[in-house]
Length: 165
Image (cartoon, rainbow, N blue to C red; front, top):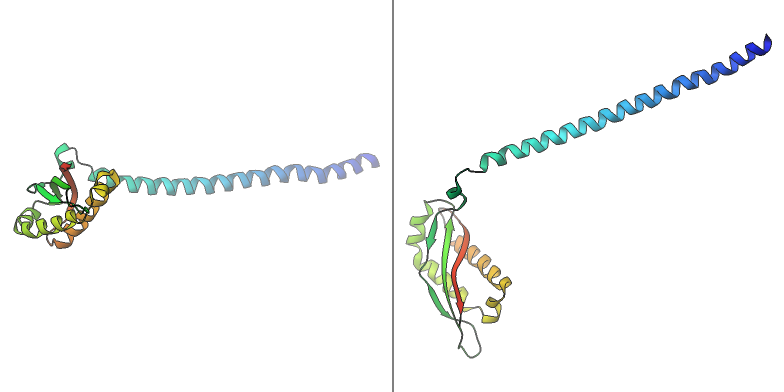
């Protein structure tokens, strides 16, 4: 009998450990699951909140994807070459952010032409023949033109003709 009592006392301590370990593991699992679930819920709520305004901005009208355009007269300029024997012929269209800008662009057409001519004549044929050079020219034109404007901005510049001779 004494041996049975000793075994029960010995197994009692192990029995408590057998009960406590699964409970602790269960609590850790539940706590970790709650933590992950709450952080995922917050991130999914944030993602949903970010998507909603973007859906409102997207228009179903394909014509709304492109702003109003302002076509400039073609430019024929001598390029900055040692011999001065190369020229550029280009036609440029400006995309406006609003129709209200049209009147200002028409009033400032002389200023626009001057800014564009000054920049074009400073470029060499080597600079403009590379695609990278055309992108750089477009960015420079955009910043110089927008520096003149008060009633809006030009959002994009399109070269509809670009010939180096």
